[in-house]
Image 1 (cartoon, rainbow, N blue to C red):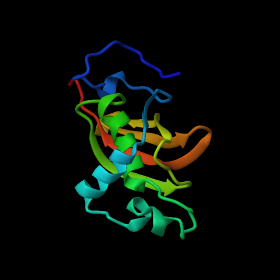
Image 2: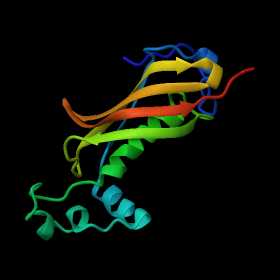
Image 3: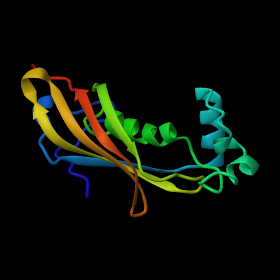
Length: 149
């Protein structure tokens, strides 16, 4: 269950003073064919493993897979809209891609605060994307978080 310590508007994120280690939030989305095609167009990544079923069937994945960075975008969504939310700034992100995502899969991105550095307004956040019980991406984010002071 997500830890929501206060009710806030969609345009207001948490300030560093409001955060605590262990707070968590998530964002879920079902990946569609349109998402994959649009991401290919926006990013310029037209690798046939993403957009050509005939080619993708010959790969180790035995079919088309979503772009890894499309999946990672769901981490950005949870960080930028929920925890810490609007006003935070991405500083870095490590990633390990563990399993493919396909059209029709529902990806849940979860962010959990593991460390706070209040004097620098930084939050270290464990990031995990899952499809069902399968971890598809994991990593760690470092964010700059606004301060009330």
